Image (cartoon, rainbow, N blue to C red; front, side):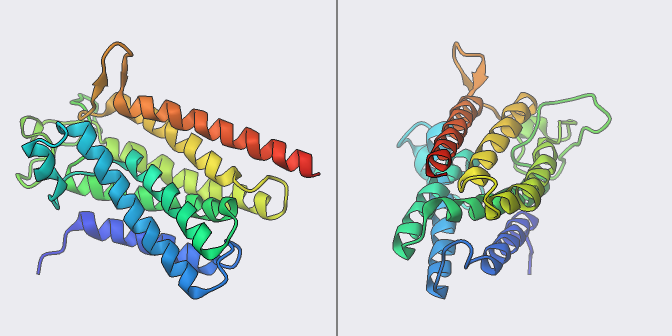
Length: 254
């Protein structure tokens, strides 16, 4: 029996996140056990579909042979930024079904999400996907296994370990959200929705910087940015807009 480290690490991240949500389901506004499982299944499905769809439209020509090949592939085809949209839509749907307030539910989901993401990036490191540019730095890593997902021309070439560049700050972001931001929201010092806004802004910054070292980027002509960096700018602006809106709402209610 063969055990794949990529899938194992993503599963471990999912278990850790699900455990976090399970122990706090009452604070999330989930009154029934069915509401929790509906949320978890929606997050899994929404994240997968959002990530897969954005990957297909970013990395393949829409509806070409490569598009359909990647659509049914089990070894490629996922964009974390697309998963953001899918997960937010899933949480919105689950909140409506559970008749729970959206912002507290999204706060708790977003607090654990970077932990799951950190596990996922460790899985990427093991698989060789989301690889970096060639580097002469002493911490560069070389993927030599023919089964790795790195570009074949870079196999055996030292590259930036961009997966680790992202995993480490993701773990720090999760700690800050869980240990600092959520307690402030629970005590009423910050409005509901703050953790979600902090997550969107924090990850946008992490990914924007990491893109400078990635070796699989898609440049946007004329802007000097990658496609992911452009999406990060949109995410950061949305996060700022969310925080300004929820802050004004809290001030008006005071």
